Image (cartoon, rainbow over all chains, first blue to last red; front, side, top):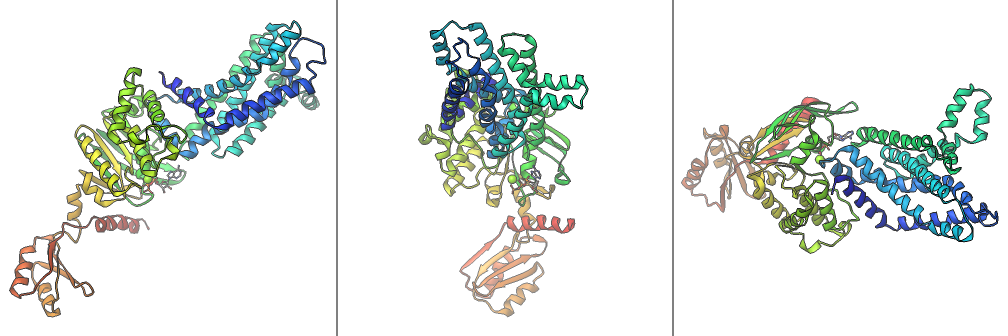
Length: 244
Length: 311
Ligand SMILES: Nc1ncnc2c1ncn2[C@@H]1O[C@H](COP(=O)(O)OP(=O)(O)OP(=O)(O)O)[C@@H](O)[C@H]1O
Ligand SMILES: [Mg+2]
């Protein structure tokens, strides 16, 4: 087994060895259901699609993903395990990537467990399953971007509470950048191309675009790029902070 | 073999390790001694590739640490200070994880884990979660992960810290049994350990080497080296007579315990002279012995000297 696989396996076992994992999954399933049915009127709309369900994912992730990512590195630093881990004959990139991937897989499992909603919508009508698949993919990519941010923040802070709050705030800023409200605010005093830049940075813009079924490679690449940049930053901060 | 050349580590403004140079050879157990905060752990963290030195060179088994860190890490087994491990894992799972991370082939992992479990005597806690282990067992798990890949170089930061006397003995035996074919560095605050396991000891104070000797040589530096002690009721006039002897530098008398210590001039051998003297004056002694030297006294001298110099 490669070192990266060993890390992924150990981390996943780590998640499921505490009740936190199950609490996370239950909360995620409950809230995504509640939001979709009550706030989004999934059934009442009389349309066979899952868009109300996916609309609320960014806001759910905003506080659920930091809860997953906060202990990713801060716990290793607090316990001193980081010394053990980083003196093993493993590339640092494998450590960063392995930890990130396991968190991502964990969120993917939670996301997968929402499949009853997909089954019931297929039972009730004839939805565009290609679109639903794309939306799931978009949701997963968004969660990945949040997790990569969280990974970097959790290296920077030994304190899990601070890591949680900072991650949520930064993710919030990246989401917000696309809201019309925010863009209007910038429109008043920034040149158009800068406003466009801010808008194009927004997670929400790309997420919504994927949700509309415009399977634009650019949107997906954007998320993959965001993930890479934040993971690279994780590695840099790790070099600076590991000794403290 | 471990070679460190002009190794320094500066944290912000603070110099934790200051221009350290030494070589540890194969078949040698090298002890790091020094007061708290001397820089022992920091030096070990640099050798094992965890910390980047501010300046200096490190070679392990002839491989330069900075040009091929992975190859060096492959050669080293490391027990960090406090023996950290994943608390929520079972002992066996933790060791399997380390074996996988160390790239031990899948079909050999079970054998390697069993071997090390046997060697460190962890059979009893094989399926126990690490967080439920006693301090001593936790440390032994740390030792087990350090030697699971049979490394050429072993670096152990306070391997016997917090162990009971029996376990201390076991760990020392383990270190001695591995010493022949490995290069081993341990740090310790227990001076008798230096005698028990180390072939050589480096005393570090304020990040600098203040002594690099064999345990016997260190003892020779003690003023107690070759000092003769005896327990007897003795007249002060006779003590004065002993003090006046040519081979004697000084005499100390502990009235409460009736214990006399005679310090030789230039640490020469004076046991025969003193015992002859006592016999001549028909003094009945309940105990008569010669000291090799006291490491704690040497330790205090060399480390406190250094503090004074800096101040
Ligand atoms: N990450 C760090 N940042 C700042 N200072 C540090 C850091 N790590 C260690 N130090 C300082 O470096 C000095 C040496 O620490 P080190 O842990 O190497 O001492 P030691 O010899 O192992 O002591 P002990 O016997 O108590 O284990 C100490 O003064 C410590 O405060
Ligand atoms: Mg130390």
